[in-house]
Image (cartoon, rainbow, N blue to C red; front, side, top):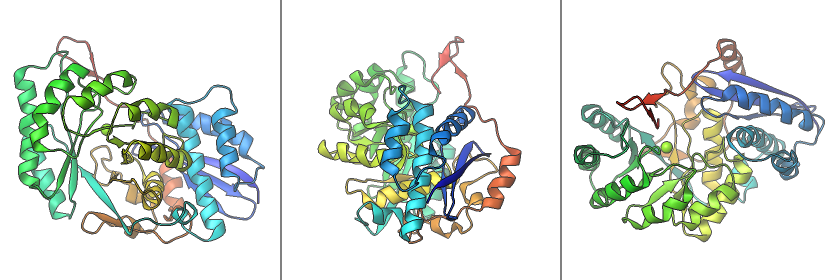
Length: 381
Ligand SMILES: [Mg+2]
């Protein structure tokens, strides 16, 4: 079997899909994207495709090595995300070729269902309360909320109290038997994180995400030891080499994104590295159906998996949703906050190719907002 063609599709709300076709008619789908930089990733995919055309798609690891390390320059969001989407598509082809779901090729299932968490906003207390109530009614046992919006260089006592109050509200609504995760989005300094996390500790969040920016792992150990709140990072890290220092700093949860961190192949290795340090895997996934399908395949085969993110109903997807691109949305119907084990070959999701081609005609030019502080200086979004 040989790869004969690789196409990309720029689809709303902010995604990029790729399709790898073979001379035997087996088709693999992947989702190579960096949100806000989809066009750059698309160009990288087509550069990598030059190498893959004519190759045997089943030599996944060899292709991974060539695409990750054979181009001299390596790593970073654009190249690693292009590789990630192609890696997903190759695993999809492998599963379809052997007639089994990808998790069967990864050693078989280690669990029968996968716990999901749902996103709730978090900036406005009334919206937060409505969001949490809705998610509880939908059966979810865990939610994730924003800790803070724009935060100035030094948070006031009132800023900090507002964070604690909103997490307390979430805890009150969820009760002790459900979980809340709190995402800082790298919006606070390490010093502020050391002030805030001990105050959140009595509320026992499941984890505090990105309490410092991803490019300063040397600050993480002090943040980890500042409180008992488990620290999570990883949506802006791209390889096992990126993850090593944060895992050694004692983070409790690693969050590689299946579409950023080198795909299924590399996420498996990041999970194994995390296992050595007793850290759990909670893949980042505010993306589309292929990224989510790839995430679930890894979740079903990974012993130290914790919980899975998904973007159904997330605020980014206004008017467009990942269910728009799947032929059978049933695979993403969560029962009691859990996803069932997919049984179809490959990634386990059938992509509606006609819908993808129609959406590609529309395209998108999604960019994240540029936030500024009250004094006009750039704020972390
Ligand atoms: Mg996040």
